[in-house]
Length: 89
Image (cartoon, rainbow, N blue to C red):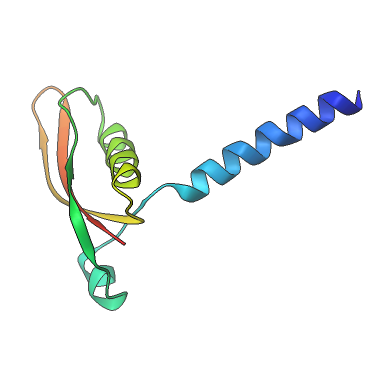
């Protein structure tokens, strides 16, 4: 029973900490206020089926680029969704 609780707690903490590491979407005002440094641009593929999927993909790509924040600069719906974002740290 104790092993089960330990495994369950580890899985729970792993999910919480993963979410805490995801890049956060910011506004233009926050970029100026926080004096964020742009480190690149990312774009989603045309495979996302909702705006939330596109944001999730942008966050993942920003993480991979080493960014903590992203600002969506363009989005398009054409049966699927695609977007472009600037990445900041």
